[in-house]
Image 1 (spheres, protein in one colour):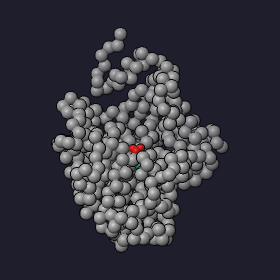
Image 2 (cartoon, protein in one colour):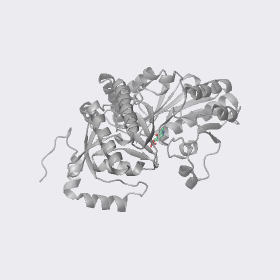
Image 3 (cartoon, helix red, strand yellow):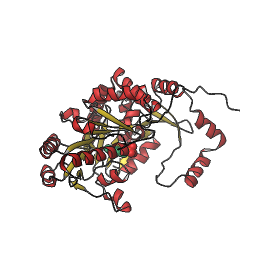
Image 4 (cartoon, rainbow, N blue to C red):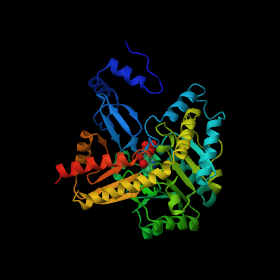
Length: 419
Ligand SMILES: Cc1ncc(COP(=O)(O)O)c(C=O)c1O
């Protein structure tokens, strides 16, 4: 018989399921009953704590994926777990028909951190981007007329899987199976200011871009390109939308990546690290764009409910109390320096990109997937993007000794397997 676990520390549901089913039986259930959209990777993880996750056999893995840049304060941070449990026992959800204190407080805090003026809450990054597109189209229609519907986005971008977000995404493999896409999107190469200028016209409603492209392999946009986008938006009365779903919430060392460049957007999409693992997203707006949507224009049943907003507010508190933005910057610099040293020692590294704890390791050989597989066997999770890039987006609590551990594993893999 199962002993009653402490709900704060024990993933009761997982132990309960493992008591009912073996790990193999869970794999079989997933295979049969969950739609096959994901290439599941082994092993079966059952627990997380800090920067580590544990598999069903009790083995520990240093997690440099963090739910793909989500678990910003580490797995199962005690304060986050406690606040979620307390709020779950008080009030989880009411719908946006009614006011809740956690949502109002979170909106105020996000605006204070960003200088934005109002927030629409959603559940995912795609919805946050989708909301930005809707605001931009309505704003442009109000200001410039119904012909001004074009959205300029970038090649290699990623904004999510809903129809609007996938139409903005500049990667044909995510778009082609779902054609026809939403009309009115055009794509230009990243960091090509001339192409951006040529794409602009009176029909332009908005430009949407990630300050550092994440999903396509950590590609930062140049200051000059961001500035050109800002200037062109001002000149044409279009909105600048920054998708900070992956870069936001302290990951790059500032709360939002645009703060490094002092180039503020009109609209900003957030999700991922905002809830530290609890699903919540947000679209922030300022100026006239902040007043564009009126009752009836847009909505979300779950967006920013009391439980999600409490989780996000707690994540922000933890980032502030533990200096995690500063840590992301310092540890990110340390990590990049060690990776550059590995390059000098002959490891198959071409370049190290990114900022803070958003690191892309460009490889000189097509060994990203193999590297990740070998690293996994040695207790390290890293995310291969295509054949030539490793994406490193760990929890912001990562420390030097964990970086040393990660670099030792990667070095061993590269020296033993690919030399
Ligand atoms: C920059 C960016 N925008 C949007 C999304 C979509 O977020 P979600 O999967 O929560 O819809 C992602 C997800 O990877 C992302 O990296």
